[in-house]
Image (cartoon, rainbow, N blue to C red):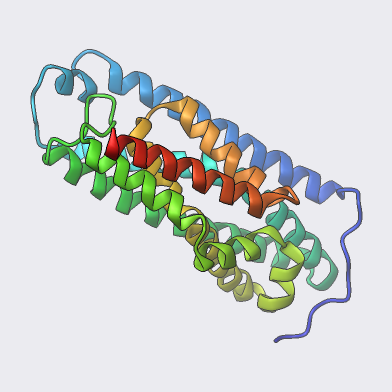
Length: 262
C-alpha cells in the first residue's frame, strides 16, 4: 500500500470542507427538485404515463429514452450522494494534509466524478431493464410491476442479498472511511480517480439489489425513493447498520413471499 499522510480528522470542518459540503447538499437538493419536475412532466397529458394509462404499448422515442435515463441518473444522485458524504469529506481532509491546493482540488473532483460514473452506468442498465419490462407489458402507468411473480422475485432477491457475505463485505468498506483510506489509498491526482472507482464499486455492490424494489412500489414514487435513500444512509452511518440491513432483509423477504404465496 502507498504511504499515507500522517493525519487524523478533527471534529470540526475547515472552511474548505464546509464549502464543499454545502455544494454537495445543494447538488442533492437540485437532484430532488429535478425528480419532482420530471414526475410532473411524465404525468402531464400526452406524456408517457398518460399513454400507458390509455392502454397503448408504444415504443420509446429517443426523447423518451433520454428522459428515462436522466431520471434514473438524477435519482441515483439524490439517493446515493448523501450516504457518500462522510467518505468524500474524509478524503478531502486527507488531501489537505498531503497535496497543494490545485492538485488536491482536481483529485477530489476525480474521486467524486468516478464515484458518480459508476452510478450513472447503473442508471443506464436500469433504463434498459425498464424498457424491457415495459415492452413485455410488465410495468403499469406508474412504472410499477404488474406481475406478482416479478414483484415477489425482486423483493426476495433484495431481501436475501442483505444476508449474503458479498453484501456484508461491500457494506463494511462503505461504512468506514478510515478503513477504506487505509486499505485503498493511492497518491497523486490520478489516485483520486482510482479510489473513486473503487469506492463507487463497493457502494454499488452494497445497494444495487435495493433498487429493484422501485419496480415494485413505482419507479417515480418519490416517497419510496426518499425512504430507500434514507435507509441506505442509516445503514452506512449508524453503529447498528449491519443489523439494520439484516432486519430489512427479513422484511423484504417476508413481503416477497407474501406476494408469491398470497
